[in-house]
Length: 575
Image (cartoon, rainbow, N blue to C red; front, side, top):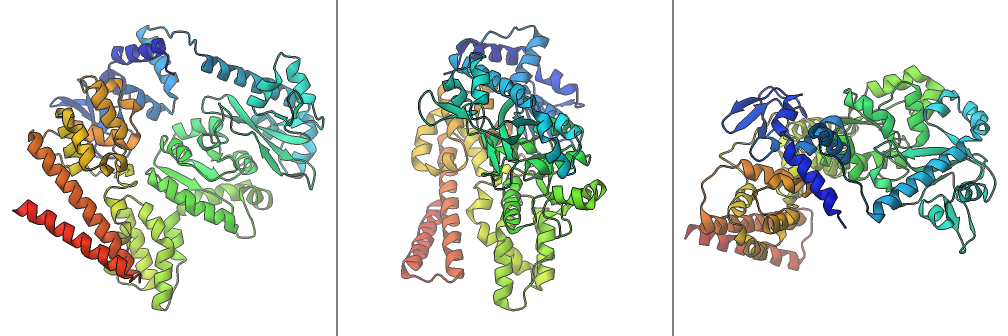
């Protein structure tokens, strides 16, 4: 449950801060109309499309669609955490942070303390891992930089160490450092392992990973379980070391494992991080997107690594990142082997010589018969669908058309048909980063027009939800509409940061829309247009299934029914 005193402090800091003054420290702003304008700091542009609204205390970029409050701006600009931004601005404004009395916060603090003591315990015997590091041709400085440690063979060594410091076995289990097969019989989670402390975004140890030191010791890697302060899908290993390089302009490098991170840092590639033994999550991708527009993938070259690369490409592209690929001699499996067998200079060279991932994949396609060509296109179609920039996607289509000797217009039509609803309104639409593309204020999407109308007439929201229930759900607008109904539109800055990022972009576009107020008649028209769009998307999907060879009578009936519904809608509009 939220702490009312703490929430009030955050609101007071926001209201005491002038967003124009803060942004002007790093962006040259000039007044134009009721807004201030400047070059966007989050993407490259020559014509200012970055606007700051002093009245609403919000910013918005028409080029890359970034937007939000002064808190959002500083989080993105400096790569800082929300609470750190509020504290900094609170200090500037002379508004003291209240003491948090919530039991949840104190419980989290105690878990961090437990992990701090664990780190102290693992550091006591870390000289035991020196021979292991030597066999991997890693200098001892690596142990110091990454604060590597050693978990002894004892079954209850760590448990005893923590109990002497007043930690209960229940707290040890909650922190993920002990396992209790039976009540009051907890034992150490890690034994005879090289220990990697894992830091969160604020530089606090939130978990550990243990690497087996004996051959045949299973599992090879044993990580902390999920805990109240550790969620694998929200943490990147090495983030606390890489973030300063990202802030200085280095392109993030993403690898698979701990030793790949260590190898890259040893070679001077300090911008490298890894997901924690799991598939890359959208949360981790969003973290990377906060620091720039590109990322370089350097996953293993085995089949599993290449499949992981494809999945990561889609996830990273969907948050607007340009994805590059670092490739090396196939005799080497991963970045650590490149460093050991080819040398640090070779590792730096292959990472620096990265190429756009999809362009590299497109160059490997081949096919001579129509069926082989169709199969080749099918394999890259999900990758093409993930690319939001139309110019970039067209460039990849040209490469594929040349490689397969397929007419470019046919290939483009195939890709567009396969996207269907996804490209017009689904997951990708509001994740796009269109560099330099400024949406015309006279031609907004129907989604923006309807949301702008609902900002003026919030009493119509329940009726709109009833008529097009899929609209707020697919557009990530459920929270936005709830806030408009419950908290109003007079102080948007007080609640806009609580809206999902996709919904926030749409809301900011709606706020910028200055069209005439058509009242209920306009709202009804927007609803009908959204219904018609939905029917068109459904028809496209059905037709694509038919083109793929599905000829069931039921499918044909669905196609005819969809065409009839579209016809009736158009007739009502024209009549």
